[in-house]
Image 1 (tube, helix red, strand yellow):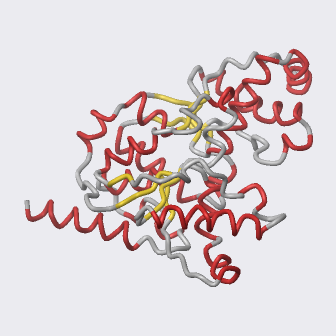
Image 2: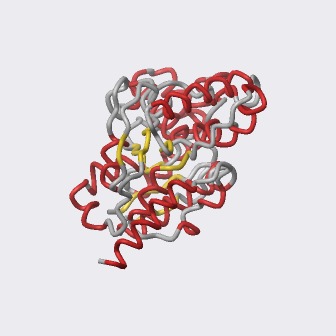
Length: 296
């Protein structure tokens, strides 16, 4: 399985743990990710709020590079995924935007390059049966809350990721790891990530509400596939304590980090050291699995 890989800006800054765990899991599963040479910022997350044509052009610049490689473009950042999918959708459905993109980039683009999130590759291209065969440390006993946020599932006509009200892709992959999915109602609620810097209190309150719902459902960790959600839910927990007077201590990890542990990849290769909130409960489950394997 070979793909054109678009890492996105956060992969080399605020979401290095997302990037590192994606590469480690890909290597373990034999998935070949070919980084797009000369990739540029896709415009997430502010460009589309100022100029739709500019936003479509920024995303299309990378899609054109992927087209030259003759491969589907794989993204592991939900914001980059969203902007690329929306660009494709708008180019297909708007002759004005399609022409503006062609004028901006100096060549036509018809919105035809498939854009896939990495978790889609895991579930739809590799499949749960093949994944289960690779699991060496099942994370039995760990209770996880799958959290999608906004970018993966909205707008549904553009992303087509899963059922926008009740997606299940993350749950199905969590199940493969041996962890237990908790039932909860907050998995597609907004964390307020878009207002993280401009209206921080909104983000803090929204993210706290998400964590509280996950805790009420019995979750020991929240599993995400979006760096903006991860930052809001993880980094902002210190601000939640200051604003709301409550300590949350909820680990927020990427699906690729969880899967990596179940695949037997050492935590230090999965970016766990970059989390703000201690992932002790998650790592305890992984160590328990290792001990059981040794005894067996």
